[in-house]
Image 1 (cartoon, rainbow, N blue to C red):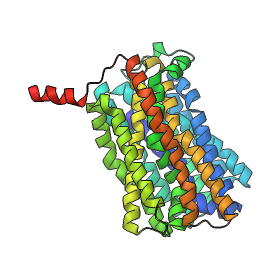
Image 2: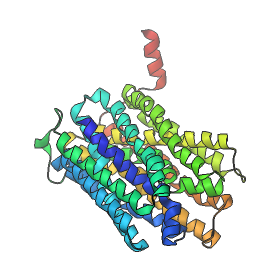
Image 3: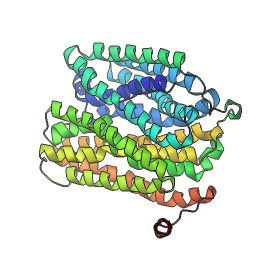
Amino acid sequence: MWGAGLVVYVLAVAQRSSFGVAGLEAAHRFGVQSTVLSLFVVVQLATYAGMQIPMGIALDRFGPRRLLAAGAITMAVGQLGMALAPSVGVAIAVRVLVGSGDAAVFISAVRLVWAWFDRRRVPLLTQVTGLVGQLGQVVSAIPFAFALHRLGWTPAFAGLAVVGALTGVVAFAGVRPGPHDQPSLRPRTGGLGEALTSPGTWLGFFAHLLGGVSNNVFVLMWGVPFLVQGQRLSPGQAGAMLTLNVGVSVVAGPVIGELTARHPLRRTWLVLGVTALTLTSWAILLVPSTPRPFWVVVLAVALLSVGGPSALIGIDLAGSFNRPERRGTAQGVANMGGFASAVLVMLAVGMVLDHRTGGGTPGLADYRVALALVLVPLAAGVVGVLVTRPHARASAGIVVPSLADVWERRGSR
């Protein structure tokens, strides 16, 4: 059951990240500048983020089987439209379908974990779900990119659409309710009001923001252009950085998942620690005024990539602080954090680049100014976690012992 959901999620990530590989080709195909180019991903991710609450309600009401199948088919239709789009307006419009279908997939895949496994294993398996899904980035960075460069725009996107549709068939045939599902508790509204007023939901939102915003901006839109035009890497080297992103997730994801399971009262500490690594990465890439050596770029991208697995702690926080009948809705809200903020940053980066270059080719100095905008949501996320954390703990009756108390108890054993 879980594997069927993973198949859909892998292809969903491939379709979500496909434009990060095709961005420069899209600029040439449609003859657009940076601001218009960023609209492709902005529209897609804005739709993804905006549909999280409706999809969370639908998940609580109808379960993951229908949502996974419907999401896969919807994305496939969107990618087929992308393959055949005669103009930039049509191409941007069909990204709405990709974002809508994508919105249903991850929270449905996570629901399979909660439905089929005991609570102790959920954090680790949520991380495994996320990191297996990131193999979709490898699909977009290697076979899709190969097809794009060798076969052309239309065959590459059409092929991605066909494979995506097949995963919808797999989900519909393979997914069934799990032993921990409680269909009788699913209200028609998905517990929207209760989920939105739960401080645990918003703690999850800000935790997801801190882990996801930088990684999404880098992987889904501006990473490859920045590395090629700003850091002067070859397209092959820039593509390898996307693969490195997946590799780091494979290593860091299980570690973060196990730490989350073992220390559920310290989950936000882990989120804030990874945020420090993210800030270090941006400092390495943006503070120097000259391109960095290749090994330094590798180190910075590796640090930045830890944020992907860290974002899933927000999903776990939202799920654990909400009752089962509203869990899908709450996790949908939390899943908006890293994507809604990334939408705003990606659009703002494109606007700054166009303003500074007048539509010309941006250089490192331009990217240093534009990408520094990511610091704004990171600051907001840190404040959000620190403000909502005590309220979430109080609402659940949780008292977190100090480290001194923990150390004293261990010493007395």
